[in-house]
Amino acid sequence: MSSNELVDRKYYSLYVGNLSADIRRKELCQYLEQFGQVDQCQLFEANYRRWSCFAFVLMNTPDSINKLMSTRPHFLDNRRLYLKRELPEQCSNKIEHFLTTESVLIQFKNSQNQEINEPDFNEENIRTYFQTYGNIRNLCLLKSIRCLIEYDDYDAVDCILLDSPHYFNSHELQIDKYYSTEQLKHLERMFTHNQELPESGAGEDEEQVEQFLHSPRYLNMRIRLLTDSIFSINISNEIKLETIHKGFLTTINRRKELLEQIEQLTKQCQILQEKNRTIKENNLNRFQLNKNLEENYQQQIHDEQNKQNEWKNKIELFHKQS
Image (cartoon, rainbow, N blue to C red; front, side, top):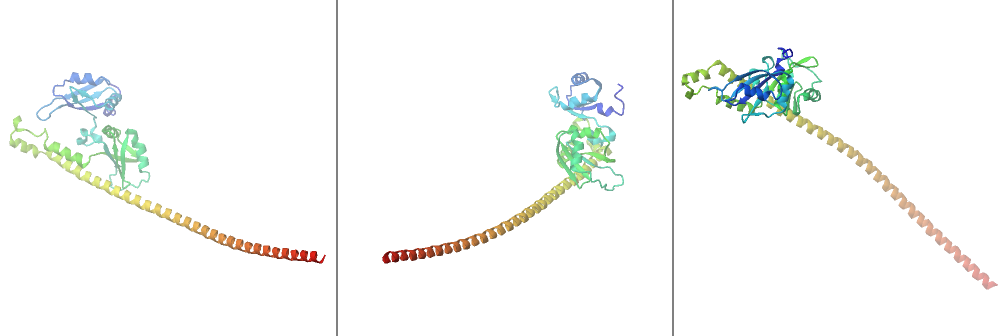
């Protein structure tokens, strides 16, 4: 099809896992065609190395892939299908083609291993750009040089990888899936008890098993798991340190706020104390003034009484003389 050129092919590809061993290509295509036209379907049947079937599907439009991913979960033959977008080689490590995670690690891509001073690389700007891919559950900025984003759905992480490369202020970003130490331990258990290991009941002898365990493919896989585990532990430690650092800064800022509040309250108390002192002085002055007024008033009354007595005496004397 004309729109499905190689440059755009990544947006049309889908990986379908956990298929029934009895599944047929036609049956799978009929189910998927509810969401759009299927152009190609490559089905891999189960064998002694694989306990279930899987398929690589090429849909007619990217919208068909979006419909399939947005309407999960899907069930076929009473089995829940494992759907994910197929990632091209250039945008992901091989182990990430089939594994999913809700977390993605974002940092500047720099071949000289020099730290890039980019003040705009902050939580607000990062969230504004990457929240277009899905609902962000958590965002942690580590030392202002890398950022770990956790989404609600693993499909958001795959969509970010499909849209690579990403740029921030002309700096190319390195986008990697991030697996927690718990996820990597689970993955290691899967490989340790993997169906890919030859089984003696399948006609393989101990020598063949030993050869597989020492094969470059298996050893490379183990090295990759150990490397990712170390990296995951380092990132986990960075997150813990960043959390402690933020908590420390929050405590310091809170302490600063409390000290400022105490200082303001102290000033208010001083103002109130000054007002109280002024009120007390005014009350004392009023009390003294009232006392003086009362004394003056009593003296005036006394003087008036004396005058009245004098007049009374004069009147009586006048009456006697008359």
